[in-house]
Length: 407
Ligand SMILES: Cc1ncc(COP(=O)(O)O)c(CNc2co[nH]c2=O)c1O
Image (cartoon, rainbow, N blue to C red; front, side):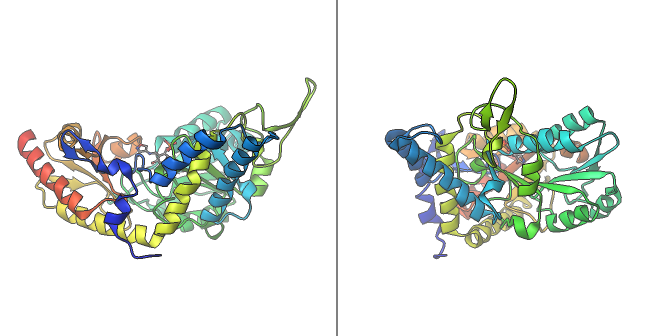
C-alpha cells in the first residue's frame, strides 16, 4: 500500500469540504454511517446515466451491462471477506435485514421449545430483536453474555452459558456504542465445540478490521455497505453454502423462483433464492468501488490512522474534568463513548453541532447496554481514516467551552 497521507485522502470525499453553521464540517459520526468517496458517487451517476436497466433475464445490452456490474460486486465481496464461493454472498438491504433473514429462515427451521440462543449484552437492537421474535415464536430462550465495567464480554460467563441447548450464538465483532473488539475467534470455537452455530454482526468491523470468514469459520456474517464507504440500503449476508442451501426461502416473489404454477413453485439456486424482487441495483453496483477504495488504501493504513486518532482522542478527552469514557479498554476500534458529569449528552451534541462537529448522542440502539452502565446514553465520537488529529483537538476545545456553558 502506498504511503498514507490523510490530507490527500480527504480530497476524495467531497462532503468534507462542507461547512456547517459557518464552520468546516468535522464528521465524527462514522459508526452511524461513513462518508463516500467520489468513485462511489460517480458509480451511481454512471449507472443511472449510462446503463440503467433491470438485472438478470434481460437480453438487451443495457440489461447485460447492468447484470455484469451487479454481479461483479458479489465477486468483490467474496474476495473481501475471503468466502469460499460467490453463492455464499447474499445481497440484502443491510445488517438488519441480513440478521432477520437468518432469524426467520434458519431460526424458524431449527429452533424448538427449550432451545437457547446466546447474544451479548452489547448487541445492537438489530441483533437482539429478531432473536427475541423467533425465540418467542418457538418457545426458545434468549441468554445474554454479560459485559464488564471496561466494556468487554465476560468470557467465563459465556462458557457457563454454553450447553447442549445452545443452538446459535449471535454477537457483534465490534460494539457500535463502545468500540470494543470482541474475541470472536474464541467465541466461535467455544460455540462450535457445543455444536452451536455462530452469526457475527460485522457492521462495525468490516471496514476497520480484517474479516476472513474461512479463517474465522463463522457460519454467518452480516454487514452493511454504508458503514464502509458504500451506499445505504445495501448489505451482505454471508452464510456457509451448505447452511444456505438447507434453509427455507425468506421472501417470495420474482427472481427467487425457478418455476411457478398454482399447484407448486420451485425455487432458484443460491444466491438468488434469497433475493426476491428487483434488487437495489445502483447501490449494489456502487458498493464495488467502495471495496476497491478500502483495498487501495489498505486495512493496515486504515488501522494505523484510526488507532492514532483513537489514542489521541482518548488522551485529550481525559483532560476534561468530569468526563468518563464508557468502555475504556485497550482493544477498540476508533470509537470513544463518554459521559460528562452534570451535563446531558444531547445538550453537548447540540453545542458541538453549532461548531460544525457531528457526533451521535443517545443510546445508539443498544439500550440494554446503557441500562447496564446505568446511563441514559452517551456522547459518541467515531472516527474514520479520513479524520485528523487537528479535528479532534477542535472537538476537545469545543467540549471544554460547552461544559463551561452547561455546568
Ligand atoms: C453493530 C451494529 N449492528 C447492526 C447495525 C444495523 O445496521 P443497519 O442495518 O445498516 O442499520 C448497526 C448500525 N449502527 C448504527 C446506526 O446508526 N448509528 C449506529 O451506531 C450496528 O452498529
